[in-house]
Amino acid sequence: MKPPYQLSHSILLMTASISEKIGAIKSYFLERPSPLLRKQNKIRTIHSSLKIEGNTLTQEQITAIIENKRVIGPQKDIKEVLNAVKVYDQLALFDPFSSKSFLSAHKLLLDGLIENPGKFRNQNVNVFQGSRVAHLAPPPGNVPLLMKDLFSYLKSKDEMTLIKSCVFHYEIEFIHPFLVGNGRMGRLWQTVVLMKEYPVFEYLPFETLISHTQKEYYKVLAKCDKKGDSTEFIEYMLNIIDSSLRELLSLNNRLVTDIERIDYFISLGKSKFSRKDYMNVFRNLSSATASRDLKKGVELNLFTRIGDKNKTRYKITSGHNMPLNRNKTGI
Figure 1 (cartoon, rainbow, N blue to C red):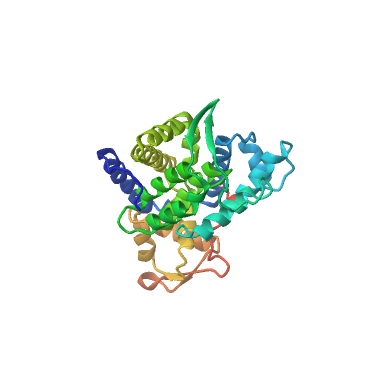
Figure 2: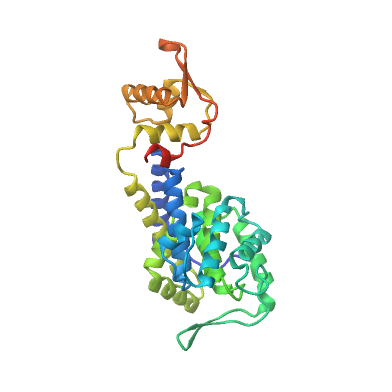
């Protein structure tokens, strides 16, 4: 059964804006960010998602944990970070349409923090706001069927992935399938759903913007509960996604270095190529700049030059079929 919501004018405008930005990201070859940016985004995402749930560790402490350094802090908070790192390290392995995969993610995320992680709740739950009951979750006996329906909706081809991801996020908050970790799972699984179609979402920390508008996040959830549909939450989340994409474009709206272009090209896995092939990837590049890039690649022993003049071809040097280590190249 399709969850209740309306395709408002605002939703249609936001999906168009997001689609346009995703197109720009692809054209600027930003859908596969540098390893350093990926690491920074992972840290920001973990910090923001756990901060919403009351975790006290800073981004610096989370960075230290990822780098296997000793951190002093509440053991529960450290354990939450360690679990989240495991989960976000294997995002691409989760199946967005599988309830079993969803439960395995919850098990990893809450391992050692609650009893029986990775299982739906078997008792009633009330969500409190201060001393007031803000949300009365459905009875535990209804949870398996509600989740089955929700995953069936997610598999449907009748709706855009952008919208389905927002609906799924909201419904997890509404159904509250777990005793603990529903907020984390709603935000995590929206990322898993989106990155299946748009790989850039693996590296897009939109949870940071949610944490910056946390009061509005809960306010919109409450309003949707009261109205009985998720329209306003979809509008809120699409705005968050649009803002995150705008931030990524703004961050990268600068002169890209030759090493960054070479790094990206190597990541595409082309074994042999010509200058024309290189320029087909970087369409705004002049032939002179492309030639300088390729010369730099040869000087750095990343490419081997074969032939001369119009018959010149380049071959990626053995051992350099993966992106460069940017820390070593000074980026």
